[in-house]
Image (cartoon, rainbow over all chains, first blue to last red; front, top):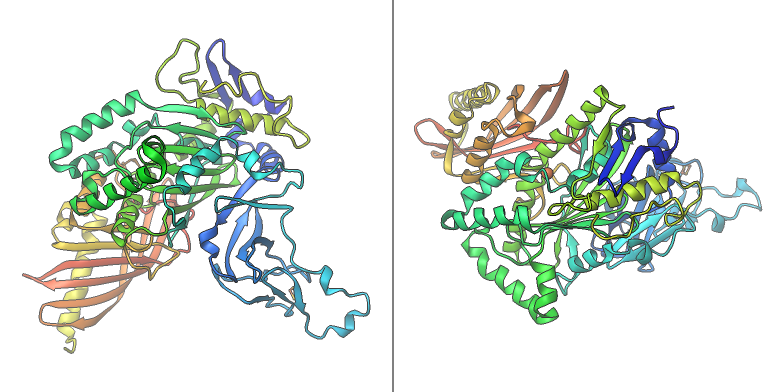
Length: 445
Length: 161
Ligand code: FES
Ligand SMILES: [Fe+2]
């Protein structure tokens, strides 16, 4: 046994300002088994965005918490999640990655289901006898499926609280994203998955860790600076001040957490122009910002437009709303290996010019061949390898924790870890029970 | 214009020499093969036929970004590829599909093996080139479409394919 109690895996001492995580949390199969049972089978998990299932019959195949599912819009217009396993012997009834279907006909013996999951045809039905009831043999759904502002989630836990309550403070950031356009958002086609040899929590931390930016991503910053032309000095100074001065971490409750950069990092396609976008893009970006001011007033528009954020939607979704808006979902496979889904999301009504800039900025930084993400992968894989040498040791997440400390804080990461340890320690469902440690809820510590 | 054997061989030689520059990590010399209006594209594994700039891809570099890419890779601070990667690439099945006095369009199959940490990471796929005749050949368009369904288990495509 590599650990005695889950609560032994996290040291959370606000008085001393010490927050540490035992490294077996990243390497132990027992921990992963417990995570599957007490986190992935209890929490709400992101499934997909409404724009992926626009028309009736549109479907996307996904694997959520190791369950094969079909995310689809039924002939009745309802967004749904169905388990992709035939009620007969279990074969996949949907074998395409995505598409539009009138029905799903199982390739094995031909049982056929409509897009609401009802079993509508069984070849040569008579040998089953009089008790055979097709109405009881439809495709099943996860116990809970709900959407918030177009983002669909499912939970394997029938007693899960309502989705909006679960999302707690993370709703504010989903709202800011959804409010970027009156016409709604859409997932940009072409999202893809990559693998990384690291624990899933290392990757969750990494996407919300701003501390590494200037060291690990110096080649990205250098390239951006080289693109800034005449504005180079101004942008370098802007970034320098911002990196050290304006970031704020937030505990959004239920394990959700945010870091706000407090400025528009390297521009924001919505709606702060950066020299790297090129002069031709400038009027469009500025017009988009004016529209936000018209709709929401200056203060709210500024929150939507000017502030880059990284949000952990617990347990495994990251909303990286920076120069472009990016969704990433991290799936544990083994303690030391993950698969990461990547999507770009933006206004449905944006001009081809702005869409091209959005795609370009995604590819430049977070893409698998970008100037940033490959080095993130190298860093988390290197940490994971390091644990082999020192699994008995602790990782430090104490930045900004001491009562007398000021400036940069990792309070967002601590919020995630506190929920994690509370979940693991809780035998029954209840993310909000006594297992939570003191200090949770206090903002930004 | 019909493709004569000599031209086909010339293009095949060009691709072989290009592969050698990449395997030998002579990236600055490799950059010199490109025209000023060049484009280097690697589409998303989920949408291999997608139009760059309209759907998400892995790479859509103009010459400025390609120079930035090489500068980054050779800086010693692109940590995924520092120390410099070992690669071996095989370029075969070269077909010259269109030929005009100034331009050629060619396709080829590739297998690029990257070796790191005791493991071999093979990436296979199809190249498409638009070459411009200009004291020999120059690359105006280079597209490397990978056959992988996802970037797993390697994660990154941070070498030049
Ligand atoms: S398993 Fe689907 S019809 Fe038999
Ligand atoms: Fe990073």
